[in-house]
Length: 254
Length: 217
Image 1 (cartoon, rainbow over the protein chains, first blue to last red):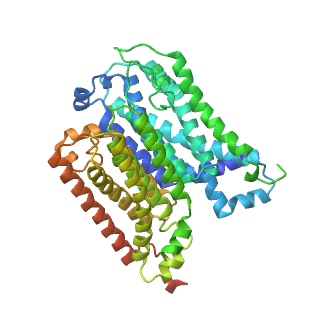
Image 2: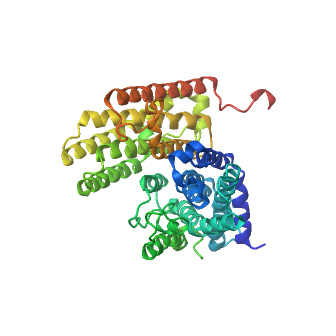
Image 3: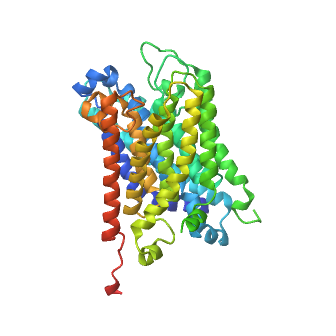
């Protein structure tokens, strides 16, 4: 096994065994079920909940945001923690390259975030099936899974993971928390509308309009959606690049 | 003691809080009047920032010297309170400056009203942070728990249609709560904050963190 894969595997095992992550997933699931399940009471409040695409988009716009917010705190100390506890010094003394370490940490945490996000997707679809009101076939469920993964889970998870794992190595972790809490706050405040969404909204930006479109505002803004995607991927890549380019991060010979 | 705590905390809280206050005032001066900047800033952003500061700088069980302090300090609870008050006082200076700034920039915002709103919400969130940081030794857990309560409250604004919820809702001023309700709400938050301090005190008294049994060694 390559060293990168070994670091990633260890990181994933460390993260997945933390009860706090599962606690956040449980909390997100409970709030998702209370708010979004297509029960009579919820349907009276939100008319589109009987539609699987809207249901899943709503789950991720609100409860997926809470899940990502919780995971942010669990991932933010991974590099800083290794530095403080001396684990990084041990790794630097071993024949492990910087790219193995950084790549492994990123990959392990990305797999962890994706596990949590896809778990929420699976659980929410199971909940929908239990309270099902529509007559969707298997094709609808496959389509919703594919579109949510492509337009929301993958870009948002990469953005949050790369930022959370890498940026605290560059910025003070408290400053990082403050910046990203404000970003999450703006996300929580944003509401779906006929207008273009700001590019920095990551759980209900213009990219997510490809999952479900409001019948009254069916228009999609491809330019804005591309900008949204570029922000999510670009910020993640920038965060990784900043750490990779930091000379004092690893041995002087690399 | 205060001098030592100041050394441990360092200069970072000062420049980060100063930067936050400056940026917030700059955004506020350029922002429109559709948003109540006073409540956004001093009921939502600054109270959670206070919790971040308390959770990350006023560390209890994640402090590397915790075992020594727990074993040798005259009173662990006094040590926690002292550290808490020091950080809270530091942020309060910047918050008052921010509140004065907002009330100067945006007419119709009462300084005492914003200060009361800030203090009560910040007290509750930071008390929660302290209580969690005594109960767990996992780094960043206290801020995570407080953060989830904060973000969930932000998104659950529609829940205040149920009257009992409006008495507990964290951001009642931002949500437009009426006069008798928001006063009761803020009083309840202070009482809950005091209860959390009671939990912290009890946790220190019964030493829930003491896992090693000296007799077995």
